[in-house]
Image 1: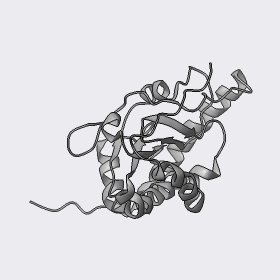
Image 2: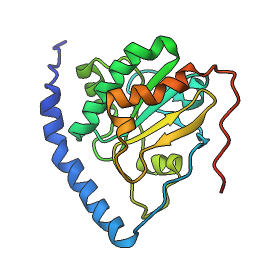
Image 3: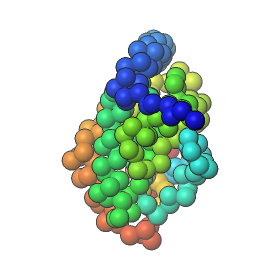
Amino acid sequence: MPVRKLRPISTFVARTAAAAFSVAAVAALATAAAHTGLAQAPVPRKAPEFTIARPVGDPILLSSFKGKVVLIEFMFVGSPHCIQLAQMLNTLQHDLGPRGYQSVAIAFGQGADQGAINHIAQRLGLSYPVGYTTSDKVDAFLGREAGEKVRIPQMILIDRQGFIRAASGLKADPSLESDPAVRATLAPLLDAPASSAAAKPAAK
């Protein structure tokens, strides 16, 4: 049986970037016209359950990582910045995995299907769970209502007890997208024992 030759990841990103960004741009303009000054969902808050569909293997429940510090990237497959962060998560997984850290990447939106995710995971040599889902499921997890603005990628940091401790929200958060800053943010959470008291939910 002939072996299918994989295209370079740069070719794949270039082919999908224009379509993904055009969709994101239209959505951003529409939501900006309808809403301004939207508040980010409060943190800390309990992370909802989420099923991560993988290109190969059985789905994974987010709750299965309880006891670990989890950093999730909700990403677009056509975004070079999202791809760079996926590579950063790979380095973090390699360096911090033994201390109870877990990277997760979940693609959604245009082009987020089984073939695309499998291609990205293979080309980048990602050693952590990479999956895909639909936009409505991402909205439900983030607590985003119809018409609210959302920034892509969305980086979500979850502590050992399953509480969201930080989230990108409407603007870029350097503490969640820069390797040195992420390590500094992760340090106290990784040092905390899994049996420590859970963070108190933010007041409503």
